[in-house]
Image 1 (cartoon, rainbow, N blue to C red):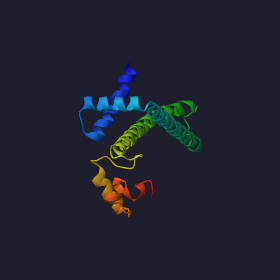
Image 2: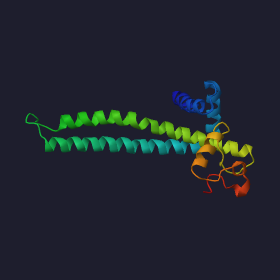
Image 3: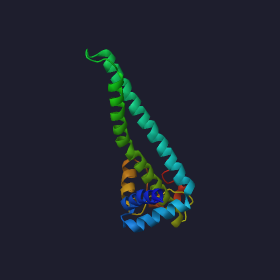
Length: 169
Protein backbone atom coordinates (compact mmCIF):
# COMPACT_ATOMS: atom_id res chain seq x y z
CA UNK A 1 0.00 0.00 0.00
CA UNK A 2 2.82 2.39 0.87
CA UNK A 3 4.50 1.83 -2.52
CA UNK A 4 1.23 2.63 -4.30
CA UNK A 5 0.86 5.90 -2.40
CA UNK A 6 4.50 6.76 -3.15
CA UNK A 7 4.00 5.94 -6.84
CA UNK A 8 0.88 8.10 -7.11
CA UNK A 9 2.51 10.91 -5.15
CA UNK A 10 5.61 10.99 -7.36
CA UNK A 11 3.53 11.08 -10.52
CA UNK A 12 1.13 13.63 -9.02
CA UNK A 13 4.02 16.05 -8.49
CA UNK A 14 4.90 15.71 -12.18
CA UNK A 15 1.29 16.45 -13.13
CA UNK A 16 1.26 19.50 -10.84
CA UNK A 17 4.40 20.78 -12.53
CA UNK A 18 3.09 20.15 -16.05
CA UNK A 19 -0.53 21.24 -15.72
CA UNK A 20 -0.48 23.58 -12.73
CA UNK A 21 -3.49 22.00 -11.04
CA UNK A 22 -4.03 21.01 -7.44
CA UNK A 23 -2.33 17.99 -5.91
CA UNK A 24 -5.45 15.84 -5.48
CA UNK A 25 -6.65 16.48 -9.03
CA UNK A 26 -3.17 15.78 -10.34
CA UNK A 27 -2.94 12.59 -8.28
CA UNK A 28 -6.21 11.43 -9.80
CA UNK A 29 -5.00 12.24 -13.32
CA UNK A 30 -1.71 10.44 -12.71
CA UNK A 31 -3.53 7.39 -11.37
CA UNK A 32 -5.86 7.32 -14.38
CA UNK A 33 -2.87 7.57 -16.73
CA UNK A 34 -1.16 4.69 -14.98
CA UNK A 35 -4.29 2.54 -15.09
CA UNK A 36 -4.87 3.29 -18.80
CA UNK A 37 -1.25 2.56 -19.78
CA UNK A 38 0.25 0.14 -17.23
CA UNK A 39 2.82 -1.37 -19.60
CA UNK A 40 4.14 2.04 -20.64
CA UNK A 41 4.50 3.12 -17.02
CA UNK A 42 6.17 -0.15 -16.02
CA UNK A 43 8.55 -0.06 -18.97
CA UNK A 44 9.61 3.53 -18.40
CA UNK A 45 10.10 2.85 -14.69
CA UNK A 46 12.27 -0.21 -15.37
CA UNK A 47 14.35 1.57 -18.00
CA UNK A 48 14.90 4.54 -15.69
CA UNK A 49 15.87 2.24 -12.82
CA UNK A 50 18.31 0.34 -15.03
CA UNK A 51 19.92 3.55 -16.30
CA UNK A 52 20.14 4.89 -12.78
CA UNK A 53 21.80 1.65 -11.65
CA UNK A 54 24.33 1.90 -14.50
CA UNK A 55 25.04 5.53 -13.59
CA UNK A 56 25.61 4.69 -9.93
CA UNK A 57 27.78 1.73 -10.89
CA UNK A 58 29.95 3.83 -13.21
CA UNK A 59 30.29 6.71 -10.75
CA UNK A 60 31.20 4.42 -7.84
CA UNK A 61 33.52 2.26 -9.94
CA UNK A 62 35.22 5.22 -11.59
CA UNK A 63 35.73 7.03 -8.30
CA UNK A 64 37.12 3.94 -6.59
CA UNK A 65 39.52 3.25 -9.47
CA UNK A 66 40.63 6.90 -9.47
CA UNK A 67 41.28 6.82 -5.72
CA UNK A 68 43.18 3.55 -6.06
CA UNK A 69 45.31 5.04 -8.84
CA UNK A 70 45.98 8.12 -6.75
CA UNK A 71 46.97 5.99 -3.75
CA UNK A 72 49.29 3.87 -5.87
CA UNK A 73 50.86 6.89 -7.55
CA UNK A 74 51.18 9.05 -4.42
CA UNK A 75 51.31 6.42 -1.68
CA UNK A 76 51.39 8.05 1.76
CA UNK A 77 54.12 6.63 3.95
CA UNK A 78 51.73 5.97 6.84
CA UNK A 79 49.29 3.96 4.68
CA UNK A 80 49.43 0.26 5.50
CA UNK A 81 46.40 -0.91 3.51
CA UNK A 82 44.30 0.36 0.63
CA UNK A 83 41.07 -1.13 1.97
CA UNK A 84 39.89 1.67 4.32
CA UNK A 85 40.40 4.58 1.88
CA UNK A 86 38.84 2.60 -0.97
CA UNK A 87 35.77 1.64 1.06
CA UNK A 88 35.40 5.22 2.29
CA UNK A 89 35.65 6.62 -1.24
CA UNK A 90 33.23 4.00 -2.58
CA UNK A 91 30.62 4.84 0.08
CA UNK A 92 31.03 8.58 -0.52
CA UNK A 93 30.75 8.00 -4.28
CA UNK A 94 27.60 5.91 -3.75
CA UNK A 95 25.91 8.70 -1.82
CA UNK A 96 26.91 11.30 -4.41
CA UNK A 97 25.88 9.03 -7.29
CA UNK A 98 22.43 8.43 -5.77
CA UNK A 99 21.92 12.17 -5.36
CA UNK A 100 23.16 12.94 -8.87
CA UNK A 101 21.16 10.25 -10.68
CA UNK A 102 17.84 10.83 -8.88
CA UNK A 103 16.85 13.63 -11.31
CA UNK A 104 17.07 11.03 -14.10
CA UNK A 105 14.03 9.17 -12.76
CA UNK A 106 12.16 12.43 -12.33
CA UNK A 107 12.99 13.43 -15.89
CA UNK A 108 11.81 10.07 -17.21
CA UNK A 109 8.54 10.47 -15.33
CA UNK A 110 8.10 13.96 -16.76
CA UNK A 111 8.81 12.74 -20.31
CA UNK A 112 6.31 9.93 -19.85
CA UNK A 113 3.61 12.33 -18.72
CA UNK A 114 4.41 14.70 -21.60
CA UNK A 115 4.10 11.81 -24.04
CA UNK A 116 0.75 10.72 -22.62
CA UNK A 117 -0.54 14.30 -22.58
CA UNK A 118 0.60 14.70 -26.19
CA UNK A 119 -1.27 11.55 -27.16
CA UNK A 120 -4.43 12.73 -25.43
CA UNK A 121 -4.16 16.13 -27.10
CA UNK A 122 -3.66 14.54 -30.52
CA UNK A 123 -6.71 12.33 -29.95
CA UNK A 124 -8.80 15.35 -28.99
CA UNK A 125 -7.82 16.99 -32.29
CA UNK A 126 -8.60 13.85 -34.24
CA UNK A 127 -4.98 12.89 -34.90
CA UNK A 128 -3.69 9.36 -34.77
CA UNK A 129 -0.28 10.06 -33.24
CA UNK A 130 1.12 12.43 -30.64
CA UNK A 131 2.48 15.22 -32.80
CA UNK A 132 1.21 18.19 -30.85
CA UNK A 133 2.32 20.15 -27.83
CA UNK A 134 0.06 20.76 -24.87
CA UNK A 135 -2.15 23.85 -25.44
CA UNK A 136 -0.33 26.04 -22.92
CA UNK A 137 3.06 25.08 -24.38
CA UNK A 138 2.16 25.47 -28.07
CA UNK A 139 3.26 29.15 -28.41
CA UNK A 140 6.65 28.41 -26.86
CA UNK A 141 7.12 25.33 -29.04
CA UNK A 142 6.09 27.31 -32.13
CA UNK A 143 8.70 29.99 -31.40
CA UNK A 144 11.37 27.36 -30.74
CA UNK A 145 10.66 25.53 -33.98
CA UNK A 146 10.64 28.78 -35.99
CA UNK A 147 14.05 29.65 -34.56
CA UNK A 148 15.29 26.24 -35.64
CA UNK A 149 14.30 27.09 -39.20
CA UNK A 150 11.40 24.69 -39.62
CA UNK A 151 8.34 25.85 -41.53
CA UNK A 152 6.07 25.30 -38.53
CA UNK A 153 2.76 27.05 -39.01
CA UNK A 154 -0.82 26.63 -37.94
CA UNK A 155 -1.54 24.27 -40.85
CA UNK A 156 1.24 21.88 -39.82
CA UNK A 157 0.21 22.09 -36.17
CA UNK A 158 -3.40 21.22 -36.90
CA UNK A 159 -2.49 18.24 -39.01
CA UNK A 160 -2.78 19.55 -42.57
CA UNK A 161 0.09 19.27 -45.04
CA UNK A 162 0.29 15.51 -44.81
CA UNK A 163 0.45 15.27 -41.00
CA UNK A 164 4.06 16.29 -41.03
CA UNK A 165 4.37 17.72 -37.48
CA UNK A 166 7.65 17.35 -35.63
CA UNK A 167 8.27 13.74 -36.61
CA UNK A 168 8.44 14.46 -40.33
CA UNK A 169 11.54 16.67 -40.26
